[in-house]
Length: 417
Ligand code: NIG
Ligand code: FE
Image: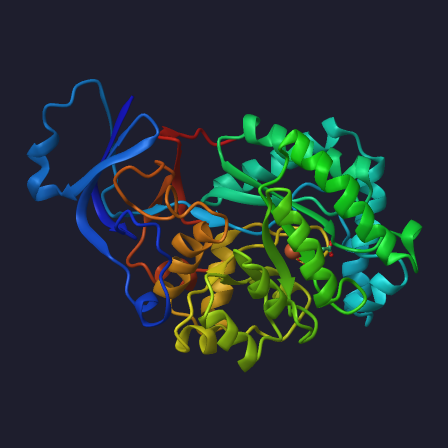
């Protein structure tokens, strides 16, 4: 099947095919082509150009043509951090926080991650798959084309495997590109209270071999935080993950400056995520690494955390990625348009910087920057067409509006669900 999008007002985020992320000053500008066409064959981007040199493709037959007059075309958003397999919502805790409790208070009384864990353990693989598919449909309609999904509400061998098998099933049932992350080190389950070393043993000696045997996860993640896992434990778990074929990621510096970034950089993490409490030492370490700093505006907004120092990181020359953290406790939204808007409004990122962060840089943070995250010949044809909009800055400016009109995944127009 061949698809041609013509009369595009602006074709945004054209990059060479090297898969490099975009850092520092370079994030300020975005390559685009106005009055353009884009050609797609099967599931790949096969060409683009100006409408003035349009004859180049006139020999095409059997062509589906979409007219994008007045509209922009973007590569689909890449969401490199979610926990979107879960059972049940947590609006009760949300109201408790409105009434004065903190996220930590709620966790200390057995709520939070442990609340979701209890409910996940009771849910069947089928229920989890069906509810996660609905969430995938929702984020698809919001422009996401690739998503990373973590385990971490199982916290037992059986339930962690259940979550990861659900993610494996989602890979075959959803048109989205999906990566799986093992987050057994999300919290210490109540059965291992005061026996954290034993739980870490279970993670390393039972869960990891079983995950490798079924080829269930590309990444291994740890929640490095006071009352969760120390930087030393984080390194221990991530190094073991590497031996089982999983690339490290870290939940770092979310609630305090605790050492997660330094632990992640030491292990060669592909990304360190959250970063509200990042300081100069972390910025310096990241500058000498291939680790992608990733901020999660949905979680910081929903939990009223301090803003991560996005501006300082970019001004220091770092690349930066954006992801949603979609989960029932700290970010019940997977809407990347909203993440981009918060990054611009609260973190003072420019629309161009935020778009780099939500496309090529977040693709890098999930190992997909060679195939996703830009308009590049040979990359996966995951793109969306906006409604008619005046300029690129209109996307974060008109926050809350749905500006996406047509979704194309794997070269196929997706019918609205
Ligand atoms: O990324 N920080 C740790 N984990 C999740 C929250 C999970 C939850 O509250 O259920 C996060 O914010
Ligand atoms: Fe998270």
